[in-house]
Image (cartoon, rainbow, N blue to C red):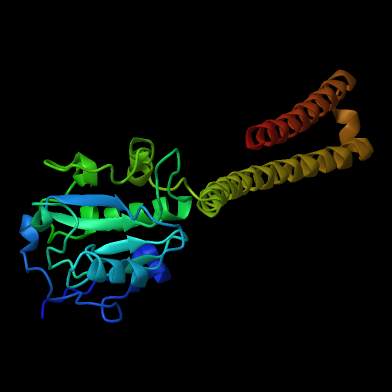
Length: 275
C-alpha cells in the first residue's frame, strides 16, 4: 500500500487526515506515481452546496463516476478545515490526461455567478500550497507559486472549474492572509522594548554626568567655606587688600553662576534628547 503521511504545522488542528475513514480506497486505487512527476497544484471547486461533506463527495465519485475512491488529494471545507483524502503518492482522478502531474485540491462550494471561497478557505489553501512549494522538497517541480493552476487553465481541459471568479481569488491564495493584529502588536512591543533600553542607557549616562557635577559643586563649596574662614580672621583679612578681596568674591560668584547654568542646561538638553 502506498502511504505518505503529512504534518503541516501552519494548519495546526485544521489539518484532518481522513484517508482511513473515507468510503473507497484512498491509497491503492488509481496508480502510484513518483512525486517527481508532479508539476502542478490543481485548484478545483466542488460545484456543490457549501456544506457538502468529504464523505458525500467520495460517495458521489464512487457511485456516479464508478471510481474506486475520491478523485482529489485534498478537500478544503468552508470553515478552513483541510481534509487529506487521497494519498499524494497516487495519481487520483481530477485532471483528464494529466492526473500523474497534479495534486488535486478541491474547495467546497460553487464559485460561479460572482461567488467566491470564504476567507478561511483561501487562508488554508494558501497554507497548504505554501507547505508544498516551500517546505516539501520531494515535490521537486513544485517550487514556485507559478505551480498553482485552476483546473480549466491546464492543457487540454474543457471545464469551467474552479468557477468564473477564479481569476479574482487566485491572487488571494498566493498572497495569503494579512498580518494578524497579534503579530503587529508583537512587533510594536519589540520596538518599545528597544526604545526603553536606549532610554535606560541615556539615563545612566545623565546620572553619571550629574554625579560628576555634584562632585565639582562640593569642591567649590569647600573652597567657599575656606574663603569665608579666611575672611573671618582679622589678621589675615587685613593682609589682603580690599580690592583684591572684592575681586576674589566676584570671581567665585561668577564661577558658581556659570556652574549652575551648565548643570541646568545639561539636564535640559538631555531631557529634550530623550523625549
